[in-house]
Image (tube, rainbow, N blue to C red):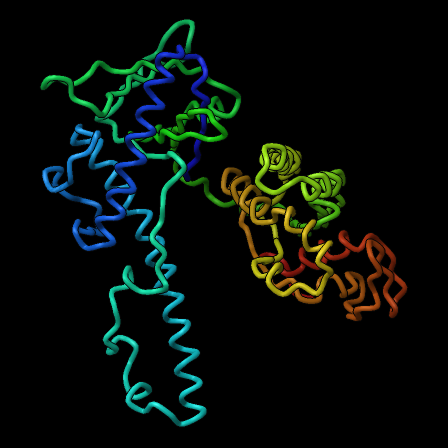
Length: 391
């Protein structure tokens, strides 16, 4: 089980901040140079992210361990893009293969396996887009920093700078940090021997990673069905209704210009609100929660452009991630099920009809059962878990 805590670097002097800005500038330029050289084949691409610093080209970054950290960051970025490009190319191959089979054409092509085709290296294909890193973020190994405890400030990060001055390493940059409510939650956890230095919204941050053994799953308790909604964030089968105010926030976000400062600030506020609402969920006597698998909800819309624009601000993956995190911390099993018909099915008699639901109201045309539509769907989900009988 892993968790992270992020700390804003705001207590250092302006001089120290200027040094961090120079580190940012040099690291980004070095990252983009490495990407250019790897994509052109002039620099070795090692999937294991291990390489001798002597092979890496000279840049403003002269510390060998900094160069290795930058190389690992670049390889990690390229690796994820290669996977995406491979999947896109294979998908295109399958479509072309199917088309040729139907028309009985290009037997020289259909007679070969995909692995037998003589294709370009993926980084030189049209499916791979060479990245340009603009946002500063890098993981640093323990050999590049040291953590000390202080009095006025809780922690001091002594960071080795990435430059050499006349054959000697420059002095360390000492950065003060204060603990906050989120980081204090992990007081008894093991802190990993690496940190992430990044810049977000014009401010530098340091991110710690904490580890702890997974908690054993509960064997006693009840199953809770949770319906994630656009108008109400969480509707639970035990009657808990949380996040009725979230819809108004979605409308405010959609009214802002995308990419503006106000837009980004509201997105951060939305994420904080999702965390706050989810933390209110009572999981004391729960051994399993059942969630709808909404992975492909946005890709098959049957709604107007205006409504879809607002729904884009409904971040159900973040809600799902937060709920999974809470369950992992509390030893609760998470089950994801197909959401088909959960909003049309009566939780009392099991009768399914799309006319049962009208907006937020549910009225069964068979038995006359009436309730909130989201609550009815949550009760249906509760019967679809591992520990619950299917009806």
